[in-house]
Image (cartoon, rainbow, N blue to C red; front, side, top):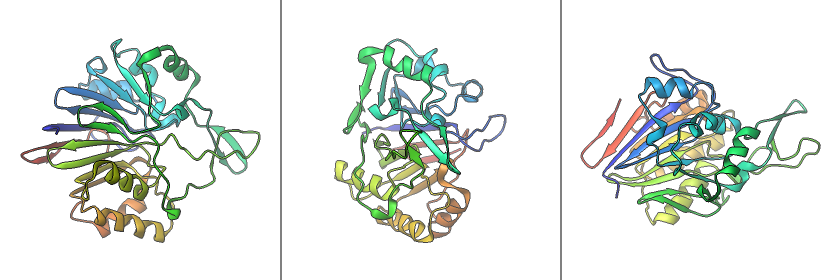
Length: 285
């Protein structure tokens, strides 16, 4: 059990104070004596924000990627130049695939940059593939591939693995992190392309826990139907959350709707936000 868990949002779409925002996501996680980066944003603001937040990548013990989109992998170059030589990188093999989005019948590349793929391939045994649930440190886990059970959370046909034909990308590389904290299970999301229902149901199955203390992160709910939002709200109630903090790709309107459904557990999430969860109290700054 992690006695002291601190999660700092290093990159998000919104920011506080003198920090910079971009469409992307990155966290710096401190769990007892271990330090972990989870995602890295697009790469345009991570250096500035690390400096302002007094975060030294050299102190990191591990690096985890939620999936292979540019807004989560772009800051890898900066981090790789500052990581120590023993840092392991945890990712699904799908992160290394080419990825495209289709807007108005035009394809655009939205995957991991070539220079970042080259670095990943160069680190040898420090690269850990996570198709299955993977233990990073004591009481710290990556889900690996998440079973898609709920039809309502089906991925929209906007993501592709080829740009010359409509070869869909089902984003099997999408994964989340979860922690056995002193307060209960804490779930940290990248984009949650797999769906919050699928993700929390799978984590509940893996842990045997029927309640989840906190869910923080991007939930890819922008422009979804009211039916999907109501389903999401029911999932949050099902697991009796005490803290719910959506950000990044959740969408402001969707976040507001879920706030109205769950006002007592809702909290803001933005660049510079820190969540501290320990055995004595929960502090939010």
